[in-house]
Image 1 (cartoon, rainbow, N blue to C red):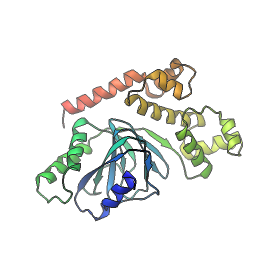
Image 2: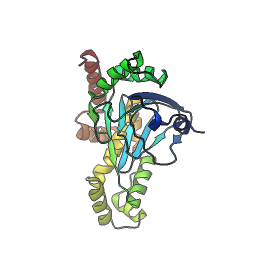
Image 3: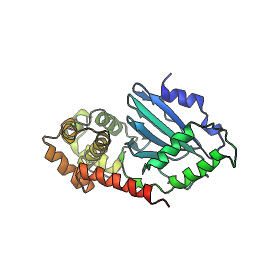
Image 4: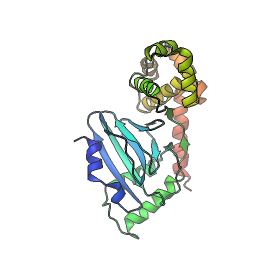
Length: 272
């Protein structure tokens, strides 16, 4: 049984009444949920090592280091974990915290991450008023204050667009043009462009660039060199990749990561 399947089998989230619990799992090889499913509790998915993709009906959310993806209660989803991934789930009752009603990426402070890890080591059937319940209260207060990031790759239920999105996720370095992709999908280039814009709100080029930005951020946070990322994403030069990154996020890769680290540090040193 896979790590994700074992975690699901051993924990019936809808039967656990506590305001929040934390679960931890390790995927030695590539792992994924077999089917879309949902829970009453919302879930914050945090990748401690490796990477996780959360798939929901209208898009993919990638979980980079120092961030977590929030999945509201009742939303259908499945998770895909890369090999050697250590992940933590914070499962929250809908009435326990004021959380976003839609999926989003949240910046996660080191303090919040450590509280989640500690909670994952404690019994789930804690009593109201216990030390664990007090920890959960503080944790949920902090969670509600986390900064929202937009690390999202929108797709749709349209079968051809979903197929294209899956192929781009598997091979983000694929540089085929919109016309070449249209030929592969047995449609005209104009139809493909109209479909992408209608379903995602983005042009084809901007849509594919969004995926590359998210993949690049995940690799950068894991310590991959900019030159290697530019090559793996199919860019002709490092400068071309950096130019794209700056236009999209307003800073070079190194400066963007530095700004993220500073923001995390300020959040830790100025608690609310």
